[in-house]
Image 1 (tube, rainbow, N blue to C red):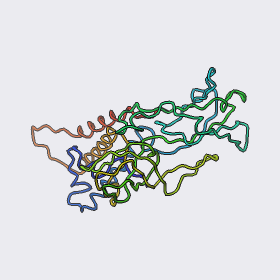
Image 2 (image 1 turned 90 degrees about the vertical axis):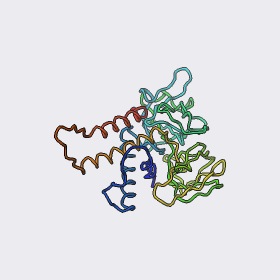
Image 3 (image 1 turned 135 degrees about the vertical axis):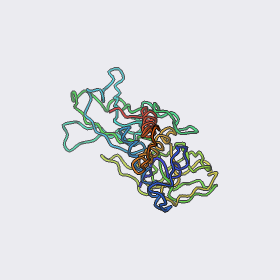
Image 4 (image 1 turned 90 degrees about the horizontal axis):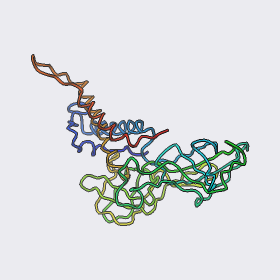
Length: 317
């Protein structure tokens, strides 16, 4: 199971002004408070995903489209290369691509070799850098396929294209304790982590890591004979030893992530707005004669703030 974008520790330590000790209700047990905080993290994650119109963490997706001849798939008349604007972004890596004649049933896929397809605008600040990317404008959603695979020989919309690719920001939760000096991490999702620099979010023990390679417990089988790819639970191998100990026994207690910090803050604000809304509906305050009462503005302001932070990341369909 994947982890939410933020953890209970992150939302309770953030300077939001929320009294978390009354959530879900005053004098609740520590276990009940942790459980509801964890639920709030998941609800906030789904709200963020819904606002940007896609899952924020890295996923592997297979997309099909007919072409050439529309704004999504077209062929450069001078170079013969095919450009395909995919539906999700940022595209981190193309795992497999195939082309079939549209009239061929069952499909007779021609595999596009890995060195014959590339991402047009690789993510800046995510791969081969010291910190995760912090810009909503980083990366693109189009790929270029070498000449010869896409042609006009079968006419407009005469070919069926398939692409399986990694998109989004690699993000996982630590699932086992890690000790200072170790060079591996056990996480709940290795998707997209190979070759990236990420942050371990663990309070005062937060540190940056560079991932050399990943090993999945079970590799994902790609469609159309595209081979396999590491995804889901597994192990990250690091370029240098860890500086600190990190506990991975509690649910979503420690995150390993490349998600930009402004998105994490936006998700924390979503959690805070949930807490304030619960307080507004559960607490009744008597208004003294002649006094001024303001209600609900704090929640509305939080919503405006997190929407502003997330706006650059919205997927344009």
